[in-house]
Image 1: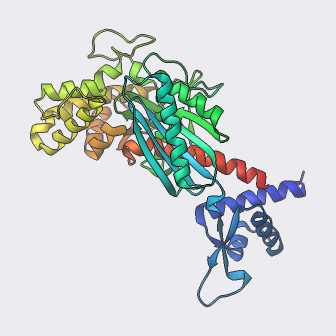
Image 2: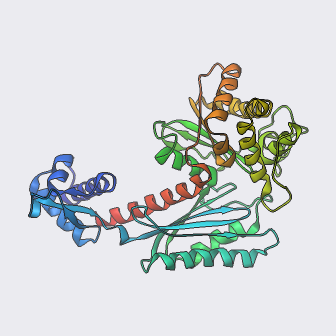
Image 3: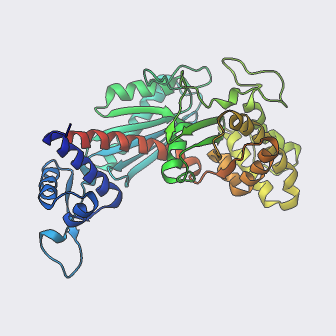
Length: 396
């Protein structure tokens, strides 16, 4: 059955808008060539999208050409503003952009462990509101939030966890109630995988696993271009994976005794001490991850003297990677997060070598390209996708 005229218009509009997003600005002639639509159809489409406030003339194509056929059309970037938040145990980072992703304002807010739930929520919400005002008068359309912990696949809410600050859940609820914008929350490791897939080290991969190596350990599973969250939202909670080389077993409320105890930041810091690597002072808030990063960098800079540490670290990481590979056979594993970024290609190569000796499944190991900023980048992608879907659907 052929599509109705209104359905055909909606489909054509979305195709044109996607082209303008990814390849624009474009002339009407270029839109005609790339869509295969007739000139009258393109003329109607352009008029309709201009009337909806989604596209406008942004220039002309070629100095020698003038007139309607030379006009360049582009997406109206300030049609909506977007926000992304990276919510960590020690604070919040926020960025506000236009519809095309250009940064308009950004800020960070540290949050001490002694801060009460109510004050922490209010301070974080105020940070977002202040940053949005700095970006300009355009209201926020969508807000993406990346947070550690499990996201309920049914409700989309951040689930309770004794290991996370209570203000995380409170912040999500308050923003959903307080803002007229769409508020989306996703596990931080999943968002890092989305960012690496769209704009980082996995752009050429539809199937891969990302290992997040930072203060905590996590994994994200991307199969055939789609995130796999699991029945309870816990796919990739690799910190709870029982592994050799640690004491005891993890429990339902504590991953101590799991892979976290073998390759988390605290374990890497202890490994560095055992190998005599120079480390920064410890004891300050959030220093475990910084210590682990410093240890990896020091080992890489030390040449042969750093090999024993790097070799043992690669052995540990290969244990967790091998468990994931044996079940999923993804063909590619990314080492991301602050520690993965610090280790870069040299650490990835060592893990790949050890993984090849442990598993018959051929697996490439790469370093993530976006570093610790991958979570914020992924949250922004989620917000932008939601806004574009809503606006483009309304246009049709």
